[in-house]
Each structure stands twice: as structure tokens, then as C-alpha cells.
Length: 232
Image 1 (cartoon, one colour):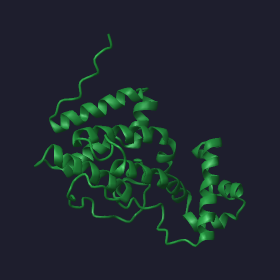
Image 2 (image 1 turned 90 degrees about the horizontal axis):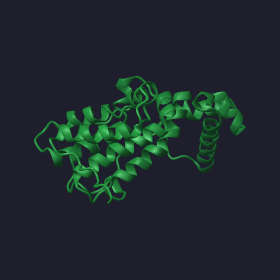
Image 3 (image 1 turned 45 degrees about the vertical axis):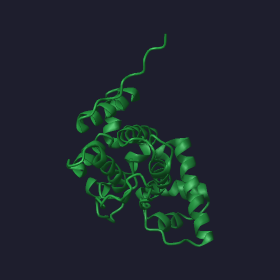
Image 4 (image 1 turned 60 degrees about the vertical axis):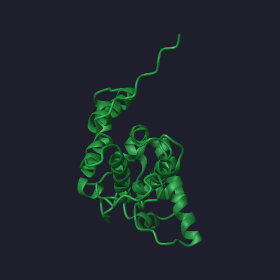
């Protein structure tokens, strides 16, 4: 989301690795705002507001999502939207929450090579490619929801990605400063960087994907995968 949902609550940035490494453990990615257990009617109202916001994005883009527009589309008062999400950024963060949880479920418990069961190097390659394409698909929403970097980089969703990358790196390059390396790797997947590369520089996604694979190889001192043999 990386790719994503941001708030001020900070978690310890690098929990100690768990054994075994490949055992999936759900990390708390957080939500746009702290949501207590909602009553059934409140949960339905929240879902209705998010559905209205998603429709507005599909029809008018992220610029069309205002608190007033969402309230009108959901046929509720504007105060209801503000009470539920706080402000426009909180609303956009909530829209990203489901995608963050889906990505986390994929790399913690999905099929290999992204999920457990593949060698750590293959998982790291697949992780970056998955994040890259997810961020590219939701680029406008991600950029609109971004807050200032100190809050963004300490958000639980970002910590979940960084912890996963750090865990994989410990298996590939034991003894390295894997916490720092994970931050460096993830910096190449920042939505603002992807926006600059694809929309300002016109780089195709295939080039960014190849760049991630090459960056992983150079940072881990491993050989990049061989290209497939041409069919005869």
C-alpha cells in the first residue's frame, strides 16, 4: 500500500523475528482511525459510507471524494461522515484498510512464492512485485491519503511490510543490518516514487519490476534469476 493507511499511533518498528520464520502471524495493520467493536447498525453505516466513497472514486476519481459528496451519496448528514472518519484523510485511509489487510494475508499465508513455502529470496522478489502493482493500481488514492512522512513511516501498516521484509532478509543475509536494508528496499516502492517514475518519466511497469529484482540481487549479494529460455 503501501501503500498506505496512516495514523499517529506508533508501534515498535521491528519486533524480534518469530520462529519458525515461515509461520504466518497476523500483524496489526491498524485502521484509519481506532475503531472499537461497532454495533451492527454502526458497522452497516460505516460500510455504506465506504461503499459510497468507492463509487465516487470510480465515477469521478479521488478528487470527487469530499465529505459532502460522500454524505450526499450515502443519504446521511455530513456530520455523520465527520464523526465516523474525522476528516477526508481519515476517510481515504479507511478505504485503503481492506487492501492493506488483503496484501498482508497474501504474504503471510497465501500461496508461494509470495506466501510461505518458497525460498526467502523468491518470496522477497515476489513481495516487491506484488506491492509495486498494488500501489500502481491505487496510486491516486494512496497519494491523496498520505500524511507527513514521520507519521506515515511509523504507521502499523508500514511496520507490517517492513517487519516482513526484515524477516526475509535475516534468512538471506544473516548478520547484515536487515532493519536498515528493509527501509532502503521499501523506499523504492514509495507511492510518490512510483508516481514520478510512471507518470513523470513514462517508465513502464515491466521496467520497475525488473528494477526491483535487480535491486534485491545487488543488496543481498545474490544472482538475479535467469531469464526463461526462448522457446524453439
